[in-house]
Length: 246
Image 1 (cartoon, rainbow, N blue to C red):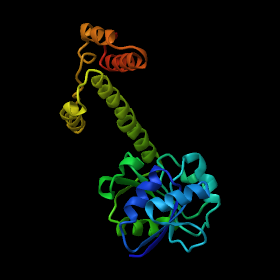
Image 2 (image 1 turned 180 degrees about the horizontal axis):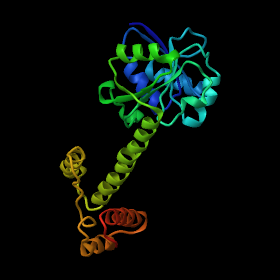
Image 3 (image 1 turned 90 degrees about the vertical axis):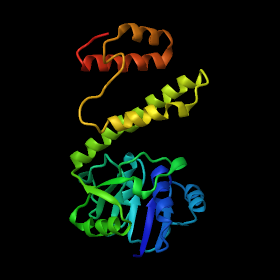
Image 4 (image 1 turned 30 degrees about the vertical axis):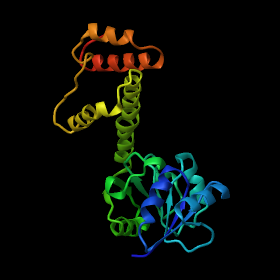
C-alpha cells in the first residue's frame, strides 16, 4: 500500500484525515489551504508538506459545500477527487473522476475521532470507483455505498441527532452547573438515553410526553430567555406529536 494524497482544506475534516492518515508510514500527505499561511500552519501542525506540483494519487476535498465546485475546477480531472461532504450533488460537477467519501460522524479538530469510530457513506461514478474502493480497503474503513438521496437523508438525520442533540444536552449541563452540579453526575442518563435510541419502540418520557402541565409550569418558572424558548418549543413539539397541547 502506497499513497500520495492531497488534502484540500485546513479545517476540522482535513484535520481528521491528516491525524489518521499520517499514522500510516506508506502514506505521503500534502495540503493546500485557502491561503499559503493556512497551508503552512496546517503543515507544521501535522508534519506534512504543502501541496505544490507533486504527483498525487487522489485528492480529499475538505471544504465548505459552497466552495467545492470552484476547487474541482482547479484540479486535474483525471485525478480521482473525493468530496468529504454529505450534501454535495455529483451531478453538479464536471469533474469526471469526482466521488463522495463522507464521514458520518461529528468531527472536531479539538477532539479528533479515529477511523474505527467512523462509518463512511460513499458514492462513486465509474471513473472514480476503482480508486475509491482501493482507498477504503487499504485503510480498512467501514463504508456503505449509498445513493445521493439516502446520503442527504443521513446528513439531515445527523443534524438532528448530533448538532441539535449536543446543543440541548450542553444547555442542560450548563443549567446544572449554575447550582454547582458536576457534569459527570449526568453521564449515566446521557448513556442510557443513547442506548434507548436503539431499542425498538417509542421510549419518549418526560412531563411533556405525559401532559404534566404542573411540572412544566415549575420548569418554566426557572427559565428565561433562549433557554425558556427552547424548553417551550421542544415541549410543544413533543405534546403535538403525542396528541396534547400546552
